Length: 132
Image (cartoon, rainbow, N blue to C red):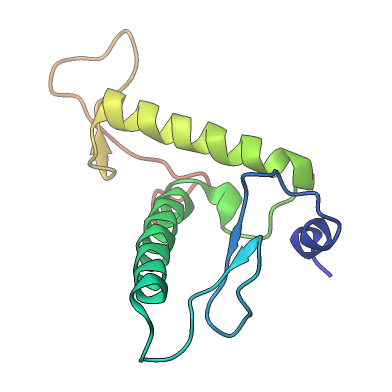
């Protein structure tokens, strides 16, 4: 059983936290999954729509983090309690990089005091390859 499954089972998630699942799982108080079926009432259809929007937003955000930071390329090797901190740090570092170097990940200005006008560098990813 994973650390996340144990945390859900032991009610160790923060009170504001919810787990978003697909429709193969039941919809519970802390575990949100879309309602099944095509003939849903307005409330359930709206719930499914908004749940889908939020899930896609989270998936896109993690897609960006996975592309940028090698720590997410394999199972995390940090304590379960430290995972939210790791995610927040990576989000802030990503935001800093975007503000400092721009949104283009392939070429950024050199971040040194001695940079010369027109100098550029290829982003070196954490696996050391310079590739996605």
